[in-house]
Length: 226
Image (cartoon, rainbow, N blue to C red; front, side):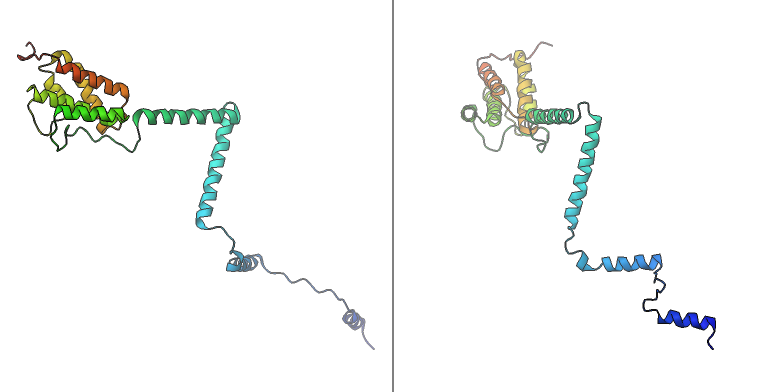
């Protein structure tokens, strides 16, 4: 005879769909297996490149910054746009006034180049540049005409390497009534030549007037009173 336990075991074996306990994998090995699987190249063929990922991060940062600025600006988006427009206008005004930031001041240098030309030659070149709207070159040539004219009149000793500042200071000794105008002319020459400041028609007109005035001015040969 078969015992009760044997009958139960035999009946369970005869069941066609007997349930079995589920198979489970520990958490850490399962994660490692998933990482190994996902690291295969076949899963990363369409991933963005390093540059694209960097650009995406940058634009995310810009967007986040914009959102924070928008929330902190009175008027929201409209107020932020107004501030940006004002900032752009301010930069444009500084650029127009001071010239390109790439042009930096290098300090005063020689007034004349190697070519020896008369005051009349410099005046002719200055007028030609002015007629063409090249105001920087016109100012430079007119200042050279002023100094060369003073040398031709023996009010200045011809000296290589003289700067515009030196020439104006030396000329002021025999032309004291025009000392300030001479200093202003030297500053204008240095600003447009070495400081990157754009010249204009008014600047050239002042230099031209000074040049013509000095040709008719009688120098103080004994020098200024002590």
